[in-house]
Image (cartoon, rainbow, N blue to C red):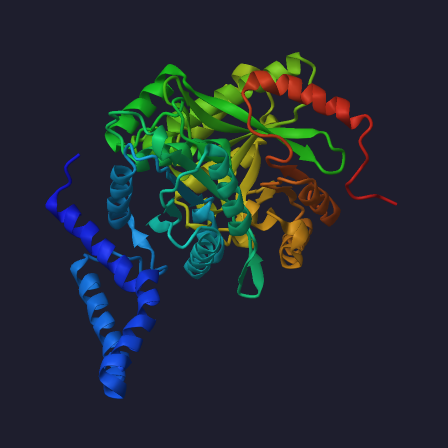
Length: 514
């Protein structure tokens, strides 16, 4: 393959730089100084000793000046997307049929928006800086690291002879381990997780219009669809998710119309009894070609298309159908929670529609939980939103204040909207069993809730330690991957039966009454 003149020139400069600034020159320096002294005496030796460093510095400045400097991120000093994309294309070309191997890793800090909402931009900047430092401590100095977006980073591994999938996965695991260490901030600790997508150079489809980086991002999308702290590698079964707004909107609208977007259910447990206290209905889209598409991808598309109210209608219907089916199977599931965004709560006909749906299924209002983000009640909601939330509470529906602790809701707003339960945001729960400061925050929230006679639910419970801690501190309910992942309805039947069976011999970890 014939290289363009610019690339030949760049390679020549690189070769000269390696000789001038590398080990060959260091080995030759003693001979140069000895020769200068032999032929010219002390004066020649002094000229070489003083002149050689100046010459090397000038040559280094020249080579740096003739090489275009790509854009750098102001916060981290890393390459930004345009410069990194150019580097990736260069590595891709250099590793064509030469026996060298490379890989791309794309890393995203999970739930970054929630972190900013809970702790502010300063905390976000500190987390990003610590993440970059930790990435640098794991990768080799010749690997190239870039910041692609505010919470997304990429690594291009320098080409080497031996690099299989197992080594890439081990590297991703080491990166996760370092990145997920606590980040000190403002006298407490912040806990973050990250998801990672991997694409080896030789896995890029032949003749694909997509770039190597697109394939790595597709692997990351797959990891994000699974859940926090996941790792996925690109393969022939990985499909590059839609990323063009108009196309995505059209496909999401069609999926909603055809029933492809379904309610999956995540269990909630009582910490006192260990029994199932409810489920949360979560929208999931399994594309027949592209696989599972993350809610963070399709929900904004539905919102832009004005289809969130229609989505909530379908989620309510599917939740009520699920309740009737659990009742028919003689399974005790007290209620199901459905999320309502601000746009959905602006519908003046919302209360009458939900009343009609409950009557149609023959269910009492307490079986349906209305989940409202804390930011909805702190953003000075308009009259229709306030009226709907109040009317649903008065009708008998439970009102859950979701992501509590991130929106600074006042006690007055909690009272005004007849909130039944607050859901403590996962940013407070994650690794709280290892952080005394986190425990103090949770204890303060629980104390406030007890004084206001509110029930509580801890979100994002991933370990037995977090579960036990929340139970001991007095949190009423728990939910998270450590309890059960969101699942299609048909899997909930077996899950509930299996869970009830485990309770027969399980020890009580909740509060003891004397």
